[in-house]
Image (cartoon, chains in turn red, blue):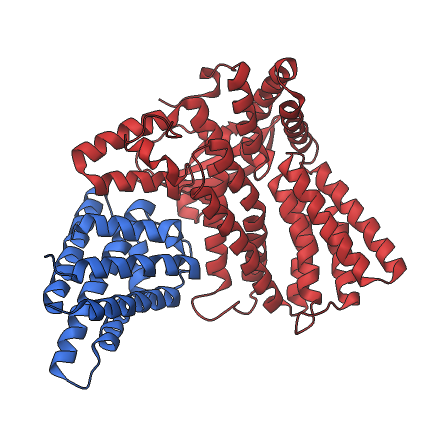
Length: 400
Length: 169
């Protein structure tokens, strides 16, 4: 039977501190509306057996905000589709989901409990996340934190242009990334908005680099940065994509290929640190949380390049479509992985997994048990350091 | 040699990066099974490649065993063959059957390689293991696996080949 949020009482004390941190991170990983929508869709999933296509229709305050299709396969797997062929659409089962603010409301409850009992250093970040989530869930769904960062960048562009200094612009861009990263780590800015800042600052640098990458063409840099900063002021991360579109139209696909590979490599480096790290769900989730904006930015570049028919980024099999698919695989699983740290904590999933894996190891052997271990690791549910606990070699997750 | 241990070592070395080897479009696959099948196929290719390389070198004295083995391994790890694994079988029963068959083939292949290698001296086994690892890494990189994951797989394959080919006293 599916566990619902109503089945889970709001905790107190140290449990409240732990859950609040994990939930705040889950909400802010990609974006609060995305987390709320995915959670609501899962909770409302009618659990149709076997394969088939579900048509998810998401509403908030009575207004349909988004709809998509979920292909369910016999093996229990699923696949998201923005649209499906007409014959599948005709046979799809409509599922209406009221997205609401289930996660944000619970975080508010936890925040209130923490405010009464916990140290300010725990309370402040959780309050940040609750406020940021409420801000993006209301209005047009735009992010005020991104809009403010865009505004700062515009002001810096104007100051740099007046001074005629490329160095001042580069400094402003780097400061912007540093500030946005700090806001992301303190749960005031979500992952998509930080990805937008990474795009807004790094695409201009990539396009303005001279052939030997030793200097920047000031005029090109200022033009691109101005375009991106103006778009960011809207608070809508999707608007910042215009700078990618412009760079591709101006023939900078090669520069974007290098940038996309660098962003993707940084995401994978952080993911590998998570998988090789300690068993703490907070630390594991935080590494994935830090990795997400990089892979979202890489995905975004590949998506625009693929849709725009840009020249291949490298020799076969390196194509924009392949990069797009890889980045999508990575960001969906990473987002789910950060989310899973909260959900697994509140549902006590790891203890049940331990029982299952020990039983499989006993009855079916080590290869079958290893497949279950990898299933949790490849979906970014848990790090490898939990293996001794899951196999029954340790009595506690941290080996104590 | 325990084939299950070898498969576990190779799947762990690929880790979650097996998706690098998928076709460029949207692929449907069962992630846990796909990694096992890929690991089995890599081990099969290693065993068969070493055996064929040794056989070829024995027939034609001008052929160097290291190069021949490397070539035979790469021929079995072409990108199209690896991408073909990313189409899941129709049912869990088919998956179980395919996994069991792949495990058997990998075990038989490595056993044949060990027989063909006979009483190679430790220095030659070490050279063959290094050449095999390099061939696997090159083939996987050509198919799209990124450098870090390819290096991890190569390190694992080198160790597994040494274990497989070193005669048990």
